[in-house]
Image 1 (tube, rainbow, N blue to C red):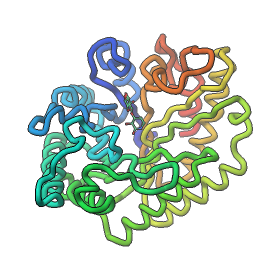
Image 2: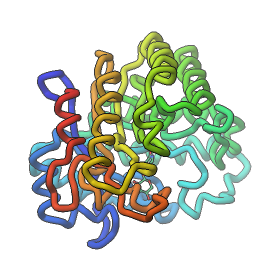
Image 3: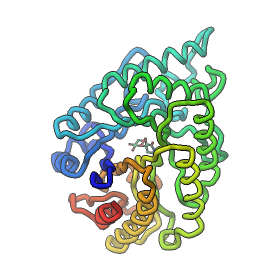
Length: 338
Ligand code: XIL
């Protein structure tokens, strides 16, 4: 990765032992992260719902642990995320919040306080997902939240967040992050993201890159082997439009969902690796792609173990390493794509 001018790394959690992302407690996992990663991103520790248990409180302790580990091992730190603009991920106290008689000014003050304090605490973060997932995949529209209702629109909230981030972290790459993917069915989502990125340019909002989460995968073996050709072309059209606007790219949450693949490990791992390689080959073809982050490095710590279960209920194998910390074909595929 370094030879290509890219940075490679992974998400990691600092939850209590036994939690799905509590992997950070595991000595063998820490050893693997230290060996493989040029960058770490806290999986949940910088999100409002973790960092802001109450209006007056900032709970930095868990994010601090990730930051300390990164510093100790000379690993860079990425930030995710200053504003997950989706009501589901707001802390409870923000639901139905009373913004008083000057609601727009109150939102401004709250966002400024949050962004200033978090950026000041982690000045080493070189790349920030400032806003996450504000485009509704169903129709490409921008999601409303309590903040946008109080401000009188979604765009002012997003623009303000980026402007505040630029001031608070002047050297960091500022990223808009979302999960539109290359698979068919994502057209409306992509269209909405592209419109948003065009708007940022028109309004001169300081956004440097599009974060493409890259949670790729398919429902069944057919879609794994048959990918490509029509949807690959549409995807390139989208990525060309994004880079044509002058944006860099970051692959921020790479994993390969193996939901519909046979239970047999060898066949499953080979299909996952081939699919991941095809995707990375395409994306690394763009000189604008500057970062590649895996969303967890070991299968048992993948968030996908909790989501969209396989029909046979077998554990998933979406990451680079198996549960015994052995490299899988996906790890070789990533290395080969780089
Ligand atoms: C996920 C984490 O992996 C889970 O532990 C958590 O329960 C929910 O969030 N897109 C994102 C990430 O931007 O923040 C999400 O992370 C995965 C999808």
